[in-house]
Structures are given as C-alpha cells and as structure tokens.
Image (tube, rainbow, N blue to C red; front, top):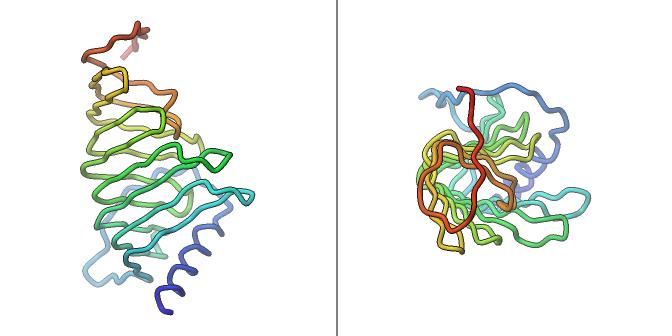
Length: 186
C-alpha cells in the first residue's frame, strides 16, 4: 500500500506542473543533512497527454527533493517514448538520471543507450531531453549505429524523440549513405 501511495504522489507532482521556466538548472547533490521528501523502488511512472501514452519511466531507485524540484534516479533508469498513436518509438537507458520538475527536462548519465524503432542505436555517456523543444541532445562523444551498417561517431548530437531525424556534429566514421555537410562558423 505504501508503494502505491508513493507512486500516486509522484504521478500527481509529475502531472501538476503547468508552468515552464527556461532556466537551465545545475545539479547540486543534496547535502548530507538533506533527506529526500519521497523515495521509490522498482516502479514505473507513466505519462500521458490528452489521454494518450507519451512515455514510461522505469527505475530501480528514485529520490524526490521538493525544494529543488528535482527527482534523482540513481540505480538505473529506462525511458520508453511513444508516438501519438501509442506505439513505442524509442527506449533510452542510463545508469542514472535527473528529472527537473519545473520544466520536465531530463538528463541521463553513464552508459546511455538508445534503441529506436527506426533502427538507430546511440551510445553516449550523457544525454538530455528538452521537453519544450521536444529534442534529445548530447554535447559529449556519441556513437550512432544504423541498420544500414553505418557507424558514425561525433561530438554533439540532436534528434527528435523518434530518432528518425537526427544530426551529429563533428562526425567521423563509416557510412553507406550520401551525406550533407554543413560547416559551423565556430
């Protein structure tokens, strides 16, 4: 019963956020005397929009800090994204993650792996989801492997949540496709 109450509280907080702030938050670990307001183990958070399933977050352990408006997933997390028809489009896994409740942005860390229904697999040590722009980004080294046996590495990445429209910045690797290069002025 306690686990159910915790899950309902998490879901209520998750869905009650209406205002979005365009403020980038820096993670500061909770102090030694700071205790999580809520904790959960081996659970799933389900998100919907207009009654349609949009994502599921499965985790081994979660801590919620109300004062920071932050949820910390510290023992593995798996996020499944769904399209408007409720079909699975991609699964993202990582060793840990931060969910910023004020804007519903998500950051994943450590052994991040993405598997998309489009046949794109991505590997990185860090990945971010920006809920307002609906984009997945990485500033670190990424490796993308496609079903066409393309293996492309790069520093910097941007994609939609279906991973069917993506960009690798500073790319190198092996591809069978004709690619278009755009030069940055940096």
